[in-house]
Each structure stands twice: as structure tokens, then as C-alpha cells.
Length: 235
Image (cartoon, rainbow, N blue to C red; front, side, top):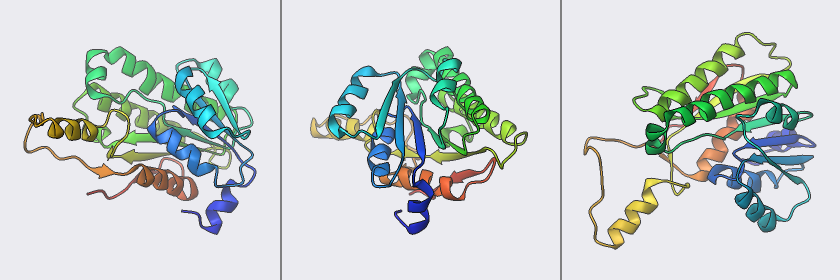
């Protein structure tokens, strides 16, 4: 998605990615380096992954901030003079969120609201929330907390001046090969001639690649208006 409109949209802009050392964040940072940006801020709480990414990319335009979206003051400070925010920080593992739903609540709801409030306060031009298909009819803690994060964004989008800040959402299916994805596990089990642990044979999963996920957020950035939700048709 390197058309002229996208290239001009990013020129001399400052970008912040929460959860920037995750599977999406790393792929997206590498994509953004193709554009003539002012800088990229990688915001996450994993110092080891930040160090690995810093050594891998070795680019002076990338700034790393070690912090947590749960800390309101920290995300407020990090978003000053930022043009666009991509909010990817989340607890996304269904079993982990089931075992510790209060942690999912703190990150997926409180952390999301902190990031949105910081964007509004600092007049960030646009924030894209990365959500999930599990938010549509949520039956687990991960889906429930992501759905509430979406509701918070849409409620706030109705009360703000879209000439100052635009808030919108992208919903993902299962990203093939992302950290914690079931596909690498299935491959390893198949190689070991072990059965695949499918909960229900009637289940469906909507699949997309990491490149699909990057193109979806770029589309939302260019085209999104306040409260919009973008869903890519997926096999």
C-alpha cells in the first residue's frame, strides 16, 4: 500500500505504536521505515524485546519507551507531539485472560481508555485501535474486554471534535504465524504425529496474514472517520 496518498500522508509525521514489540508492531515498524517519517515511537513494557528490535533495526528514527498503557501519566507523556497512534497493546491470549480476567481488564479496558484520553488531550490527529473478531459476540474475558474497549472508543468519538482527533477501530481475525497463534502449535503437533486439540469440530476461524493486518490499519488511517470500524473480509 505504497501509493502516493499514503506516502504523502506519512511525510514528516510522528507515529506511536503501543505494544510495538509484538508481532504486529515489529512488522508495522519495518513497513513504516519505507516512508519519510519524522520518527517512530515504540511503546511497550518488554525491555528484552525492545533491545532485540533496537539491535535488529539500528535506525535513529526509532525511539523506544519502556512503559505500560495502564500508567495514565506515562502514556500522556509519550503521546505529546505525536500525529498518529496505533494502539496494539493488549492481552490477547484467551486462556490467560480466562485465568486472570482482572489483568485483561486493566490492559484491554483501562489501558485503552488511558491511550484514548491521552490522544484527545494531546490533540493527536488520529488513533487506530486494533481489536478482534472475538469482540463481536464475546463469550470469553478476552473478547469481553476488547468489546468494552471498542465501546469506550465509540462513546468518546461521539463527544470530541473530529477536526482535532479522530478515533477508529480495526477488527482482526486470527493472524497467521503471530506470537501465540495456534497454527505453529498445530504444525509442531502434526510433525510429531500428535492429534490436534480442536475444541469443537464446528468451530470457524477467520484468517489473515501479518501483511493483511498492516494494510488494514493503513487503510483505516487514510480513510477512517470518528467511530468507524474496519473489518477485512477473511477466508
